[in-house]
Amino acid sequence: MDTRQDSLRRDLEATVQARKELGKEYESELLDSFLSRLDARLDARVERRVSERLGPADGYGHPDGAGRPYGRPGYGRRSHRSGIRLPIVSMVLGIPLSAISGSVAGFWGLLVCWGGIVGVNVSASLAERVEEKRRPAEPRSDWD
Image (cartoon, rainbow, N blue to C red; front, side, top):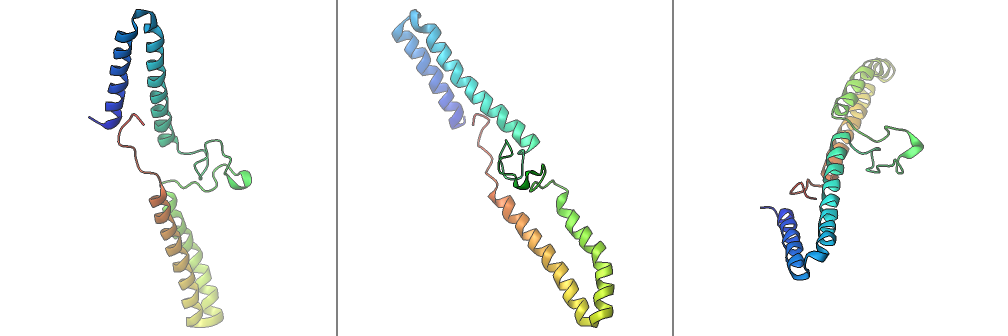
């Protein structure tokens, strides 16, 4: 059994023990206290699951959008398909850039052009990996 479930069990046992010691006149207060703690745990669990499915309101983890730069709704948020957009755009733009740089500067122009395209793609890929590592770890149970 998980430690969070153990703590819930301990809370329940403590409530039952307190009810035995204090008598029936405090039963409703003790139950209300236990149920409010249980409700808080369930609310936190539901909120976590909803935020997992919907994602944060902005790309910075602020549910109210307070950290969103320039007030743009999706700024900074990455979808599961956004990792493929930059390479596709790079290839599409690489064709005319190759023609221009090749006609103006020859082989060295092509080398600089494609070196820049590769550099942008590599840095974007590394930034995405760092962002994935910074995400918080999954909780050990559903009672967080």
